[in-house]
Image 1 (cartoon, rainbow over the protein chains, first blue to last red):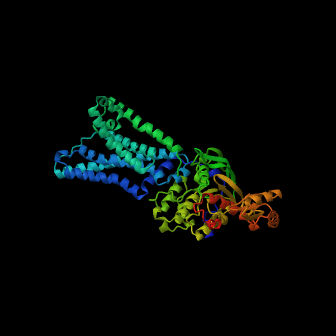
Image 2 (image 1 turned 30 degrees about the vertical axis):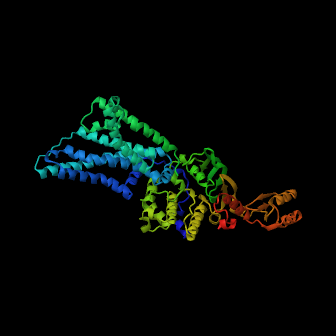
Image 3 (image 1 turned 180 degrees about the vertical axis):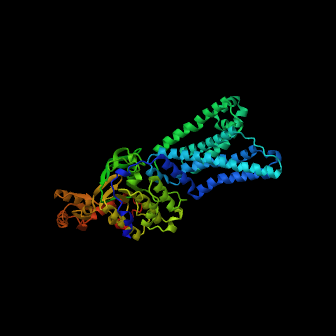
Length: 269
Length: 305
């Protein structure tokens, strides 16, 4: 068995000079993209983006009344599962390195953790930007087929600007997931935190706003969910953009910076 | 070439690695031996940039690991064979390493061949791998970039005797080509079989180091007695240096005959007296492990097996 080493024996030891090229970011990014698909759970998670879009479209066709058969209805139905799936994609891409401990290899092959995190962020945003149009294409197909079955004219009541806003809202939601992944570095913990953030917090904020006048005025400036919801309701005023900017600094930029600083220092076990 | 110089790592008040200095040279397999919790893994983690040192340095060919541009091509690392995404196949894990390092695709199959993982096994998910298979996959990942230096933490864990012999051959050939190998183990027998040089660590400190031949041919004699204090005094008075080596035993720097005469003159009953012959290393190691071993009722010999 000792002879097994021979296939590489002639090349085992050679001068290090010509192989000293660094690892370009695109290579880290493409490898990280591969890692999102190469497990069964990862593959089905990505597939679920298309699958949930199909199911949501079918539901609108089957259960919607004729007047609901507008592209906006399809977009809304498809959008909801996306707001859950995309952040989970982002969370798992980060936390897997800790929860599955594969970071021990990743951060040894690429000892600059910041570059790995950056590559993961690029891949996650890329996945969102590619998958949302795919999902909306499914919705468009549903709109054509659904209205044909119902015998009404298709209504295309979604402007390009609306579409852009929805993409932005989804990317922001995904980045919140990414931030929680970086900050918490545990799959279960980060997913729970995401659900608390996106489902429990809005309800609490709504209750608080309805009972406390001071919070009602403050809410647009501190509630990221609230500020984002404007993106689903047509075009934004300058002030609404300001709300979005301020809340994203509070909820996204600051915690991400803190999380990345922790990742750079944390010990892998 | 691996150079560790006055390396210290402390966590709060606990000193995990205490001012250690050693080198692992090209063409040699260096065994890093110590009981569990002695600081081996911490040292190796610092060496590959996963953990920052408190003070001192650990370099590979004179460079900090994190400054090596594509470290997988210079240093093959296996720290924990089980630290892999359980849902990936063995082949996929090698492919990821191949892509990070920018190697030709064919290297993946070459490596699977090298560590004797069959195509069917390579297509299985790692959660279904035995520890031995994970070790083989880990060694393949370490070797895929054709590095000059190998850093392996407990690579023989989970390998059967045939697997250990296979790994010995692999590392022997690798070192004979001029490669540097640093591997850790908590088992003296395991490392005796594979290593050329030994660095023995206990409680964060280096307690012995040198070539295996030197360490195994420790001069002097081992003497066991019920009255260690009196014998130590008698030896010192006769100008013979001695050091405690395990329960009731002393390692005396003199011929067994001379030690026997001193003991007789001092009237100390001797239970055992023999030339050390590597017993020194074994005693040092057992002494180290006895502090951390839970089943203190077993004899040192039992603990060694």
